[in-house]
Image (cartoon, rainbow, N blue to C red):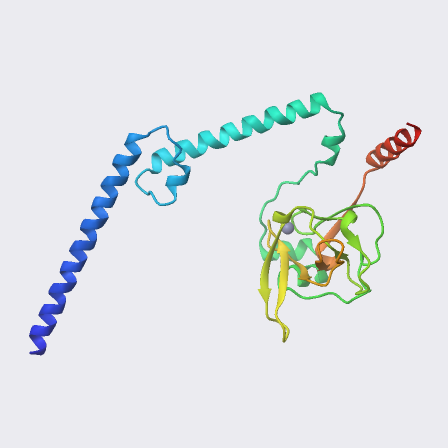
Length: 243
Ligand SMILES: [Zn+2]
């Protein structure tokens, strides 16, 4: 009895497997026919659930990317031709990034910088470099140099850590849940090299984003607004007031 049950169940299993592979085959065939029908059609949307059209998908994706870059180049070209070079000044350059090993980072960083960025530790309040820095400029990741925050969004939070109500670009930081304390917090890290930066809370200035990015000075390096840019800003202020 037991033996026959086993035989039946293994038979059923074999049938199901057979049926499934048949379905997969049909789906595969349908997909390949579909992609042959429209070789120039946009495969980007289809690509997500169409493995057989990989060739077309990549060709289209690449040509799409190329045409995007081309149109971007034309539009930025137009911009600099039409307008003054103010736009160019606003663009923040990002240094190239090569991932480093832990031992390389240990040599490159100070002990506190390493502990904060690599082990998610927190530096002491008020006894850190930038909590009271009021200069104009941008704050970059100490590990990879990616821009993170601007002095424009820095505010006095009274916590003893540099606090910002917004990031320089939303995709320059990543967030994850942190359960190191008895209540959950949102951990903030550099999106490029994963260096731990601090935490974000919802008690920031209400009139802005309402966020408080509570950062470790040790995770950042400050790049003051260049003298050239400061002079430019003053000049434009003057001309503005003269008019
Ligand atoms: Zn980084």
